[in-house]
Image (tube, rainbow, N blue to C red; front, side, top):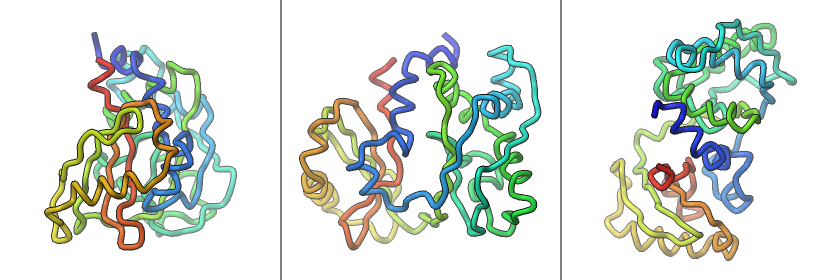
Length: 224
């Protein structure tokens, strides 16, 4: 079974973790919310995927140019761009979309460049949208440097917190984080009890809220 077939088996679970598809209770507890959300057509999605050599080989998709036109003017600031559920974190020089590139007269060209340059990881995961015949949104989150912050991963199933571990330890690390996260999770409210999906939720400490969500992903090990 090749990579695209594996993604197809869990496509709906993947798409459910896109920011705009998350339950309100999760969106409220995100560390930062998108400053802009842009619609992406199926034509633009397929054009972007067609520029990834690996995806083109596996899917037989003919290569096409990406000519994206945003439906609004983007306010210049440094952004963390995400296309659906994926960021450009493994694309050199593209994890951040710098404000210096976002001029009204050139923003469409810049965004088209980002949409043209999808890594193999991004293309494989975005195949979920092709399978389910839906389109992702392009989210522009305010950029924040997390390099000095500890990051924690929560395993959740049926709204129940199963485990929490620190996967990136920095100076703000606290040895009692498991109990602190457990208290925070139970304090979110009864809404989480209604969640059926098995998820991996990444959080950082937040002085005003205890912890805040920075990413949500399906636990794909349960979909193999």
